[in-house]
Length: 209
Length: 209
DNA sequence: CCCGATACTGAGCGAGCGCTTAGAGTGCCC
DNA sequence: GGGCACTCTAAGCGCTCGCTCAGTATCGGG
Image (cartoon, rainbow over all chains, first blue to last red; front, side):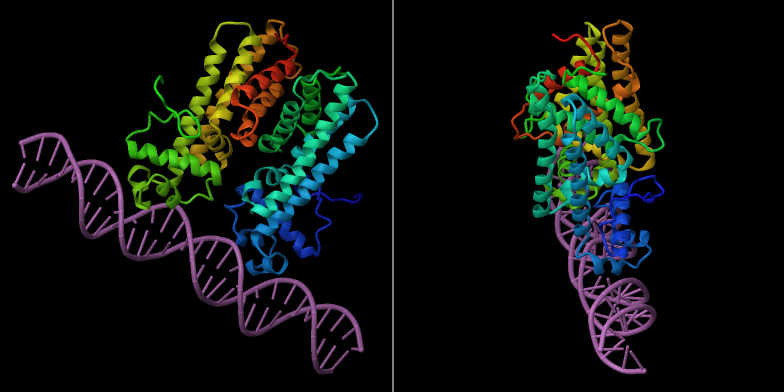
């Protein structure tokens, strides 16, 4: 996690766990292609081409095209959950923890927009079994954010009439960053993260710095 | 606009302008199929089948499959813009107008989730020319919301450090409703509209009722 | 009563899809 | 140095895609 792990897009590579090297290259190529064109509009020939291999090479490392999407989705959701768990478990007031969770979650969606797009918007392209597994991870993501908001309400720091609804809105706001964020736009991921943390603290009626 | 215009899903039919009848049936079938499976995963045979016609019948009324998406997208964006213009032009304080804009915009995204999904998430499936036209409509949508927020800031009713960023966040929040809203879930479109209007007033630091 | 215009169908074309298979190249252990 | 496991390619199979076209049913106007 210490050495250079950036692509041309300035995106961190959380794919170090994928081995061997050829399998990782194929997976990274698939992430880029799925993010650009969508899962169904991407061909296995396109993925293999981006990885500098023949179309048949894909099937040495993955059983089907859908298995690629499944692995991308699971690793991505685990990373997102990890980010929220880290923010939720840190020391500090509920407001500080919520601001940390939102800003880091948003930074991940903006900075790793290619990955986040696939993770958040291609869920319906998975088969029933794989989709059910991913939905389980999403429930854990939801629970993580709700727990912070409930802490703030219990501590009297937040004013939230509808905790489940507000949790949903906060997550929805963060996730949609992957749809509109433009790497060549005027905002850096850090700027959006700070703006959104402030907006979310307003939404829960927390005292802001 | 007065008589029964509801589908089985309880969704208003804004497709009265599409004639003749067979062309409208094909377009409604395309909206449902695109919303369920996405544009690229939908076949022309599927669209024609849902409309109770042969695959070839589609090409009597539309030149290509993409023309169907283009027409759906344009009509949908015009409807969305119309909703925001109506709310923005009504009488009342900036807070009342913003709450009205958000709640009606959200009701449209939740109640007409099938249409909204296609309109908001299949933009990239359009060709360059059609996409450029739709992006123009989106800019007008953005301008409409920003104008209300600017009015509130000018009147001293709102506290918004970053008007463009907050406008983006408000629209993003509303649009993402089309992704997660579930017709069989616990919330009605009206409940989500009210919740979101309140959350947005908090985001802009407006006095709330 | 027939005629042309309109709306539609059945059959199918060329292309590109996901995926398979036979075989070639490469390195490692004995 | 020979055998073997692993990795990759060239070729192509069966299928479905978007779309086309010749032909049929229907119907209002003369």
